[in-house]
Image (cartoon, rainbow, N blue to C red; front, top):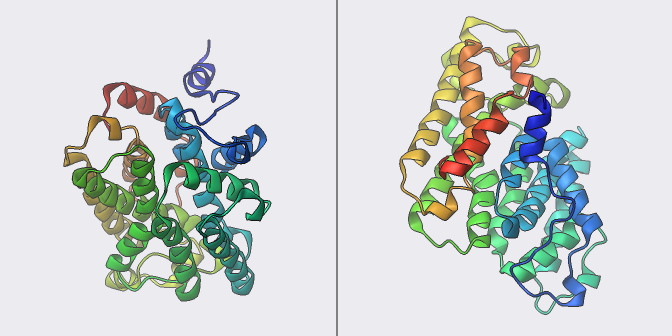
Length: 313
């Protein structure tokens, strides 16, 4: 068995993933096709989180993939169109969908005929997920589409808290983990991952004409938005990346220093991928345009699996 086959063997998804922890009525029985759709969306557009999710316990894997698929769909809105009105319309669809899902005594037949929306309804019914955290995932993306930039690094942190941390809060809710330390770790990990995502998205800013690196850091090192849009690597831009990456790493280390319940460590496995990216960025001397950063680390699947076994993140 070669290296790539071994990786697939370790992380291959099961063909049928079902919610086994709670009894569902016929109306909310799991639809394998819809679940496969959710899994494929996450696999295609959020592969690192997909790998981490596959390593969760079987009972949590399906609802976690549904939540991840919902988050991917919302996050992809700005990637699917450069027209702000079209993007706003698509986000409004998800606002309306959440409103429908959380109406009292709602039934599946009233939920939009969208596989992610339908599966999200089932998960919300089964697990009693809080509407507020799901809404944050949509609202945060809408606010970024309106402002199109961040003034300060603190603004980036807030965006990360609103656009990434809610996923971890929701996963903790799925696991029935009500623990202030786990919540604290979720907050820091969400900020770390969100800030790292800002650095990772610099390469695609040309398409959207949007520079998400905070203005105060760009000004500090005398880097213009045009330099970023043109992909002009420079020592000053590397200093910008270093400062932003340092803030992400600070949150990551804070999350790891918090003692959390052992059954929550599987939820925080994406910390491994965040750390992996920051290390590779450091190895590239903080050149955010380095082509090596586009490649999946060949050791990441093994590192994820190893840490899952040790209940670490």
